[in-house]
Amino acid sequence: MKRSRSARDEILAQLQQFAADQPAPFDFHVHTVWTDGQNSSLEMYQEAVRVGLEVMLFSEHARKSSDWFGQFAEEIRALPKLGCAALIGVEVKALDFEGNIDCSEEILEECQLVMGSVHREKAARTGVAFEVNAHYHPDPWFLIGACRKAGATISLGSNAHALGDVGRILRVLRGQEPPWNPSGP
Image (cartoon, rainbow, N blue to C red; front, side, top):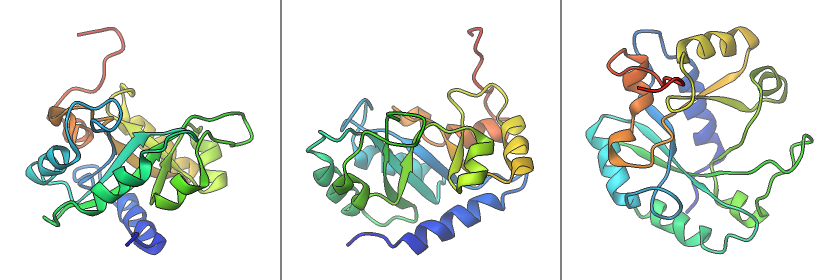
């Protein structure tokens, strides 16, 4: 059974309410061995539970030609219910500036959320979320402030490809880990 779109909307609404000292315990950018991650869906889910996440998005890379996505979605729906909601998502490639994506309707039907690149002002105008990502942004609090000023919905993501990456965005926002440094270690 697929999770309803209203449950997704409720989770996104909760995400927008987090305070500077208490980021929402969500991670909306997690990969597994289905694509370029190092761990299974179950291992990533168990790590999310261990680090205290309440919601996570499995956001595998997929294209129109990806014939495995239905099996992946079934695997996510079959995960144990241990206090962390596991959402099904996809990270897609934009085909043009009009918003066309390299993803089939069948895959989109399986997803609660779809990830792609967008500018925060355009996100606000079009009603899509802007991802604040622990992996690519050296100053995530600046982006959060800019998104809020622009009226854009915010999504928090770690771009987790291994167990130690799960929930990293929360550790960065809490000051427990340094943000990404584009000039190296």
